[in-house]
Image (cartoon, rainbow, N blue to C red; front, side):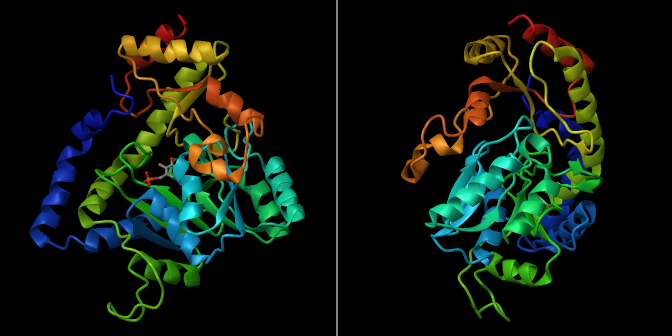
Length: 371
Ligand SMILES: *Cc1c(COP(=O)(O)O)cnc(C)c1O
């Protein structure tokens, strides 16, 4: 069994993928070919954003907007501690300093603790609060109404990290439409994955869009050899765009299929484990279906035991950001963020993709209940 089954997906989309890649191979416009622009148009429409800018990875989709904000080392960007490393790392790459915040029972940044962290940072006076990067962890939107109020109150930018969130919804708005700018990833295992690395950035702000477009290609100005700022080589290639156009054709039905599977998991496992807490006004993209075990020992028994039964279980995330070696220099210690530290000891994720059969779901539930 696969944790995310790209083989079964390929059985469905393979012909379309081959056709589109063949077209790219015959036209040979490998960089910024027509598929890239077509994909950007489709994604802008899908998310309800004015502008979409594809790029080379989810990490670069975070770095490019942060570079556009022209941050200083003394600028603080507030980031959940319970996330993938790239959320925080992008802040450092852009030259600023991440300030970590604990999560709540949705696994997303806790708005109350976010405001406390902003106030504390202002009082300490070493760093200047500049922005927030909420993460749509496991496919569930962060609480954007509350985050927007805080961002306005303290004059902070909001960069939505929707690397796991594309396809999810919050109060009838799709993820990648929140805050000043949003980032997603097309890493193969994400909700919408390509066959390599890729990402996209979304905004409604024309000036920001133009600046990020320039950063994406070496700080380009009016022409190719006019460089007006320091940028990078951050483009998505045409073959990956072709793959994504094929995957977009089945994306909505995959999201619905994953939600049906999540419902079955939850019906079966509620009571045995803590199931995902999805607020009523949210639609989850289910990048992961994550459960909490009673304690660390039960979690580790499950991970080991299920592996032996050929059912892959993953742990996202074993080490919160504030306890990562790379962030030792920030001076955090164990106990600083008790909620995410507790989750990191008890959390585990079940196989989750649109092509799981009813029998497989039942089998997984039955097996896991024996632990
Ligand atoms: C995967 C991921 C990223 C980085 O995306 P890449 O395409 O792997 O660079 C950033 N943030 C989160 C929350 C992610 O899950």
